[in-house]
Length: 286
Image 1 (tube, helix red, strand yellow):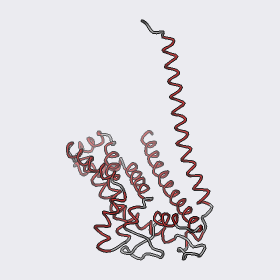
Image 2 (image 1 turned 60 degrees about the vertical axis):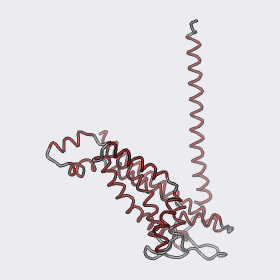
Image 3 (image 1 turned 90 degrees about the vertical axis):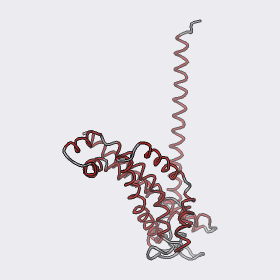
């Protein structure tokens, strides 16, 4: 029995229209939730910001005002240390996987890297607590190591992917001119992928900037300035956690302000990274 082509065409068009509407609604819901969160944080946190927030230390319980200048500096120190630990290791490992490793060995390393990337951040915090905090105490160093470990797998995979995206003829041309493999990588492959590498590292930094659990086990917190690298230090994520659960209205206000600042920092890093990638793509197109 032959089917009516008209009915089949109508059914296909109906299914297509329904699925198109469903996907459109889901997209609107996802984007709407994002803008709702951004708008809510802007209303609750943006209007709570003032000059004192960026320049003053927290005040004792019961007093109004104060700021989170120590947490801003502490977060910067922890992220700087994490970058110096995680990025070089991940970058060099990514170069090795992309340019030197055999297929079987590279697959095994990628599998282990994906496992490490999937480890809950609180477990990374416990790891840093066991190897550093128990020996020298809560410190900026311990917090930086914990976040640095979290940055390694992302730096490794992003480096490998961007290096593999460099066209093979570039490598062949450099080696045909007499360059060694290492010189080809340093002078041709890495410069060709530099925009992607920079953007990947920036997104990696944004990824760990808001982590709280590892810092509770490592950096702990501090109501004052934290000199050096072996003292407990305040960080924005940890202070947001502490202030949000406290029963004081002024602390809640400052927690919203800190959340807004942290979100804006992550947003700026993401936009900058995307702009770098877009600029590199446009340059290649020309």
